[in-house]
Length: 481
Image (cartoon, rainbow, N blue to C red; front, top):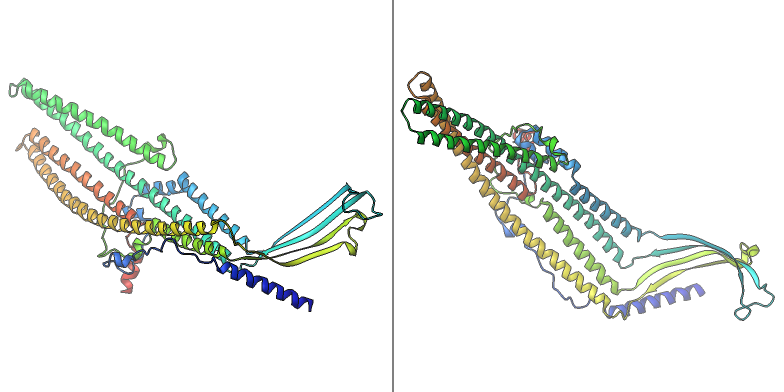
């Protein structure tokens, strides 16, 4: 009967607590939840499913040295180490939240010698000086009957996903930076070669002008003009050489190496093949962007934390207990009469908290709306970046093809003129002049190539990774079809 009475008391206490907490549970929502527009609503022309993609997107350019640089950069980057540490910290917080579901058991003890006050609680006949002993094991277990701890635990799991997505974003930023600098390095190497050949032509033209001056065919003005052109060509060679070294030093810094390491880098051998764009951008490619993934997970975190904050209005019900021995006089510490134990529920009901829970809920609502707004803004920005990137790739690809044809035609003109010069039909000066035109087209070609390659990298960054289909997968798909 005593047991039934104890249960009835517990049920009555829980009922009263629930009714009292219901008076303040789920207050007026200060900020109505904002709704983010789905991707297919913002841009209906997106495809539903993407083709298989290359994780190591930079390998599409076919340069082994570039592949090595990116791999070294990803392996030794301090920024990636920091992002990795954030993942570990988020996982540690997840384990902290997980611990709330597990019963907490602790063991303690105390032994001392003490003098008892004869003017306080004092049993007649008890020695004034006596020993005191205590040994017990305690239990504390949060029952989480409302699911509040589960909400916080799920929020912590999503925080891990956020940290992992931010790590991927750091990887993407680093890899695209290395590749873009490498393309600039390739441009500088090509420019250095063109300027070096232009310098040799300027020297030859100056020599021809000097010979003609001695023969009385030209005046000193022509010779001086050739000297001015020669000085400019020498300055171009010197500047391009320095630019090549600076690009090498920058690449070395990106892979955490010293300048001397970078100076032994070879000339790039980039395959600037045409990169086929898909008819429409698949939506799951765009949603793969690490920054969008991080924001989506942050929305889940904000909503779960808000749900957990609302459950703070309900009483916490924990199971608490202990068992052990306690006595005055160490000789009787482990006797049967020194035993003690306690077990039962512990209820904590917030009734008057000065608006603390209300303020916390309002703050969580504002944070949820802020994250949703950030995601919506970033999604629209991503769509714009992708659209601009596609337009840039198409434009630079067309320019690259035009300048490629122009360089080929200039090369044919030079070869024809050189052949004529060798048999005496055309002068050497005219051959050098035509070669200068060929070198000029070579510079235009190098500029167009770098812009086209860079545009592809910008599109990769806008999509959060490569949009290219792997050769192996393309072959498999072709056989499947």
